[in-house]
Image (tube, rainbow, N blue to C red; front, side, top):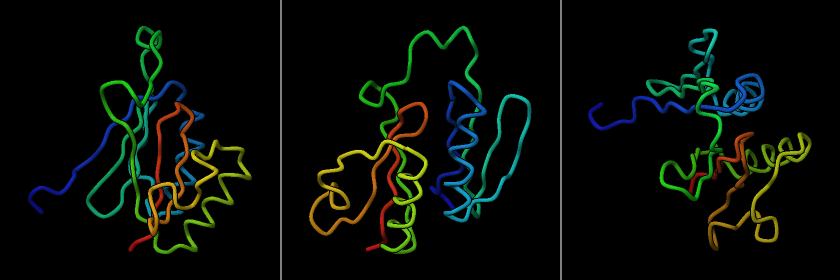
Length: 131
């Protein structure tokens, strides 16, 4: 379909850590492993895929920060508020940093039900219930 997002490619600091983190999350959202090679892997949902690539050593000197120019966060639809809650519980069990805990699950505003957290490189990720 014209205009639909084809893919997103994200360079990561540690491919193994990122794969462990993103695999369970994306699989819980319905993504399937699509491709894998020595320096990366990807997950596919319908026609859109997300690619993760190991950053070359020579580019690791400046860490990612979501407040700099570039990607701020990725947001995914959950099937329901229950799914947001289940993912939140799993994140807490894994020791993942939940953002805005004092306003959770309405950190996006009144009536906006979501969990906000960070991936291993501290990129913000959001899982939101369909309105």
